[in-house]
Structure formats: structure tokens, C-alpha cells
Image 1: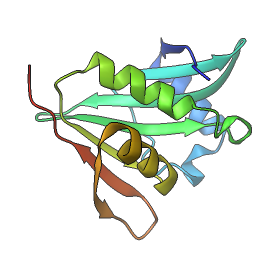
Image 2: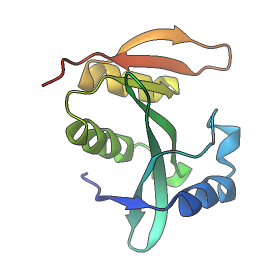
Image 3: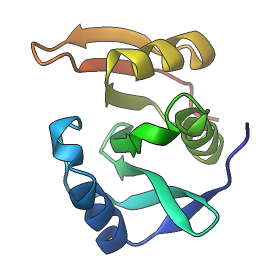
Image 4: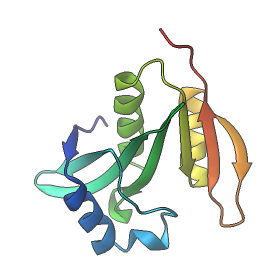
Length: 128
């Protein structure tokens, strides 16, 4: 299923993460340069943050409500982000299931696995 990805405020994204106790699953909950969201009707069901670093883009704080997981929401976020920032290198810190997704569909490489289960994946792309 294709989900409509929209931009939201930092305040709304961080509030959603707090309300859903995302800190129990998401390693870094912090401000991001841009926030993307997916709604089901008028209900916020997932967010992800994007940060521009000196040499790459970083995708942070991805969270989808448990009752909406395995429905292609993360894939919709990544499709949107990777098409918007074409030519940028990326770093994603994610859970193993998301790491599998970005490696299988987008060509990311796993470069580090942390004790808490977080996986660091990178995608190197030539600048256009």
C-alpha cells in the first residue's frame, strides 16, 4: 500500500513520539531539521525525521504505531526521502527489520550493529 507522506512541525512529531512511548523503541528522540508523517484519515500513525549533516543525510526517529506496522509505511517514508534528496549519501540508524528493508530495496549496507540491537546502515551515492 502507498501512503501519503506529508511534512509536520517538530512540536507535533515530538509530541507523537512521547505519547506513544517511542523512547522504549527508538534510540534517539531529538529535534530534526525536517519531519515527515503519515496519517490514516486524520489520525497520525507514523513519523520520521531527516537531518542534513556536513557530508550526508541522516534519517532519525522513525516510529510507526504498532497497530500499523508491516503495512509499508517505512517504505513510503524512504521512497519519499530518497527521491527528494537524490545524490546525497545517507546514514540510517534503525532496528533490524528496517535495516533489512533498506538493504533489500535501496542498496544500503550494514556497517555496524550496536549492543541494543540498533543497526547503522549507509548508502553512498554519487552527486549529480
